Image (cartoon, rainbow, N blue to C red; front, top):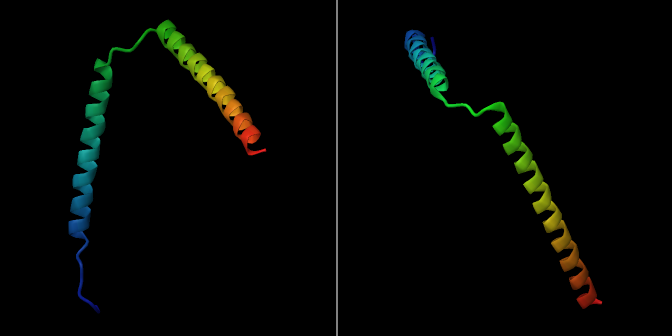
Length: 78
């Protein structure tokens, strides 16, 4: 072979090590997910609704402020 040879064994060995670490990681994630204190469905829906409403109100406020500033600048430029 030109340029020497690289035996595939180290790559396979590293692949097995990485697979083992990945497997351990997902096992730990699964264990942690069992310990999570999940909110009740009603609390989740209420929080989601509140976030959507507040986001829409902020968007409306910023839209009005943008419109007013735009008109003010347009008036000054004319």
